[in-house]
Image (cartoon, rainbow over all chains, first blue to last red; front, side, top):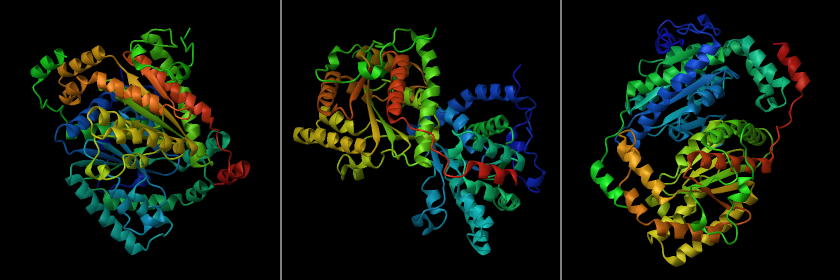
Amino acid sequence: MTHTWTTDPARLLRVDDGFALDRIDADGHPGFDGHKADGHRLLAEREERLDELQERLYADSHVGDGKDAVLLVLQAMDTAGKGGVVRHVVGRVDPQGIALAAFKAPTEEELAHDFLWRVEKQLPEPGMIGVFDRSHYEDVLIARVHALADPEEIERRYGAIVDFERRIVASGTRIVKVMLHISPDEQKDRLMQRLERPDKYWKYNPGDVDERLRWDDYMAAYQAVFERTSTPDAPWYVVPANRKWYARLAVQELLIDALEDIDPRWPAADFDVEAEKKRLAAT
Amino acid sequence: MTHTWTTDPARLLRVDDGFALDRIDADGHPGFDGHKADGHRLLAEREERLDELQERLYADSHVGDGKDAVLLVLQAMDTAGKGGVVRHVVGRVDPQGIALAAFKAPTEEELAHDFLWRVEKQLPEPGMIGVFDRSHYEDVLIARVHALADPEEIERRYGAIVDFERRIVASGTRIVKVMLHISPDEQKDRLMQRLERPDKYWKYNPGDVDERLRWDDYMAAYQAVFERTSTPDAPWYVVPANRKWYARLAVQELLIDALEDIDPRWPAADFDVEAEKKRLAAT
């Protein structure tokens, strides 16, 4: 028998009032009582559902009049597995329906604008699943930890983000905000692996260790983000990520939930099907 | 035993002097003497090779000093399987290393510029595999068939394309130009299937039948494209595509060939590996 979700992870992992990041077990697998192999099996099984929903969403917006889209925001400490989620969850649907945006340190031009300027330009079009690999949240995370902005500006940004996301949601985009949560020990192991394999050196950056030394500051910045920006319209989900298989399975299910909430339908033919069959047959 | 290529498809499928499209058998599977199941098996096996090469290319350009990229140009009559190639060949590598661009009928703004203006903007960055789903070749295909431009302008465009591609190749991008070649009967079957399934209606457009009636004009336009724009730097490949499995297998191998020609290496560490291990261990 295939193990399946015992409780919808959207309910278990959502950040609600009273949430405390330091009470989350990064080793956990809430809502799923199987093991790694069971998780891989379910991930493969659920691909089909995600795939069909994605295609319906795309179809409905491209020839129908659907205005909906999905935006997956991925935030995490280094090595937590954002890339693996992109690859093994998002990467299993049709690439033509996916819009990836990776946000690095802002350029001079980007810095000359409000912090949301570059983000707005990358919002997914109707019918698309957009994925932000890091996001506008860096402007209240690294910006806070490294004091790249005044405390008053950080305060302003929380409110600006809530307003921005409310507008996006009102336009028909479901926002799924995910923090992949690993433990410091797990990060240490993963960084060490990168140092042990020449084909992984390119993923290692000495700056990763510097950031690691500010772990507690980052966790405090995340906690503030959750308190200030987890809203009913655009809640945060904290996904335990020490087990890669669980994190992928959970994000897959969060995406399926968002798409089921949209419930996109195959668009009806805007032509006369029988007449077209005759026309085609005559060629 | 796994069936494998008996001859490199890059050699068999390349458009050289004397090429005649009307002598190509769309049902064929040159260079591969297995059946459908064998083709699927080899496609799955070769994914690993394509995957590693793509990651090396990406790594070398993102932390190394690699300037190389790959550009896959896909052209075909409707239903020939461009989407399937994107999904089942390109879609099997890390989505973060792929840049898709679909070229539809040009907008007003695009029409106000030279036909290559919108194409230039979509060229892949170093380290990326770019995919053009249709391309600047529409400007000498549909434009010729529907007389959207004067014959003199079409003539000018062949030369402009050759110059443009020479410049792209000189900058470090391998261009793999593929025409997926189906027969008119195969297209008829595939279009009819779309009319028989409500979940496929959205892929059907009555205009497809109108274009179909101009099949011979399109084939003549393709023949002219091959004669004028298949160059040693950026040759065309005509891939028999009545068998979807063969077309995917062949494009996969053409991509592998292009990447092997680049031969990207894992970048060396630009930090002291042993010192970093000690730093990390101390955290």
